[in-house]
Amino acid sequence: MTKVNDETHKIILEMANIINNGICNLDDLPELKKRNGKFQKGMSFVIHHHRYLKKNGIITEKIYSDFIKDKTKKTLSPTERLAYHKYLKKQVKKNPKRFKVFHNKCHYAVESVARYKPERRKRLFKMGNEIYKNNYS
Image 1 (tube, rainbow, N blue to C red):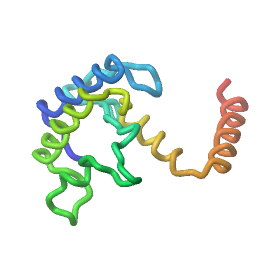
Image 2 (tube, one colour):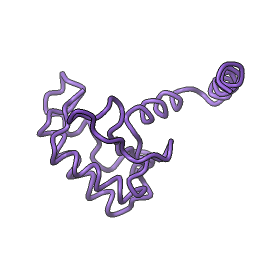
Image 3 (tube, rainbow, N blue to C red):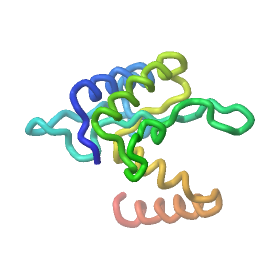
């Protein structure tokens, strides 16, 4: 995972405040504080496109991968990440309802669940609820 510099982190927090008052859309918690100068794993924010701008089914705005200069890599360098978040902040200011804010771990969970087809997702939640009921309640 790419290290987030202070300027990028500041922009992410500004966007989180615009989108949902600095609260994760999934677990209703604010960003968790740094421990020993570092964020707890999975506790900083991800700004997620809830809806992309499209025309005839084609995305008409820049996306994360458009900012990767070295196409052999899948993640942004710190400089690319800053450029991406500066661009994203303009989009968030124009229409914050197109975005969600998640903790890293919540974003991962939402993205994982979204990949399942509806019927399988239904079974996944049923099974998860049964496990929770039998072991944690």
